[in-house]
Image 1 (cartoon, rainbow, N blue to C red):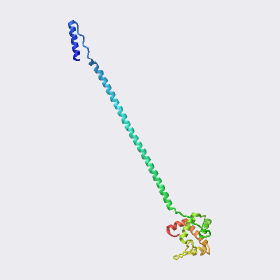
Image 2: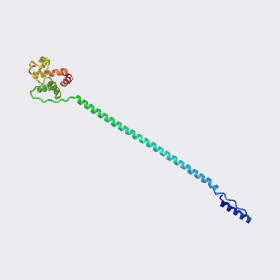
Image 3: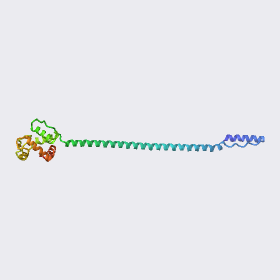
Image 4: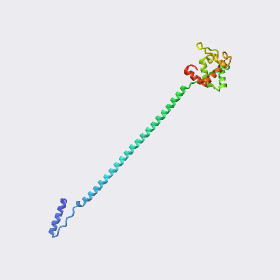
Length: 216
């Protein structure tokens, strides 16, 4: 109780004593009644504040966790896309390399100009009619004969004695195709085509062997 209140109570008591009355009962201190209520309210407010802090912390932690998971998913997607692109690039490079290698192994053969009635023309017509070989096989045969004799019916190899358009060794082998084997290009070509078919199956087979060994 404060000093002014105590003084007022004392004055009232003195007046009552003089008047012959009794002093009124002292009033209970207001602070004695209000302190529990204030304390309780303060405690409730503190508890509520603590609960709010806990909720906010959990929300922040969950947001951080979700953000980290989203980053991991984005990184995994980017890594997968990069791997797919690298695989596609490697496959395209391998296909291009294989195509280039195949093209390098395949000889480019051009069909030579054929003069009607020439040895080339005879060979071209004979290959088609007797064996069904077209321009691709004729190109291979032309490569062989051009290197062997230059299509010269009387070409003779001074070292070995090989003779004629196909450079038969000995030249007399061509007699199986005709008695005029020494002068007739058709007879020599007929024998040469039979030889090529029997030994290499096709002119291109013979050319492949000749390219590797230098003879056929």
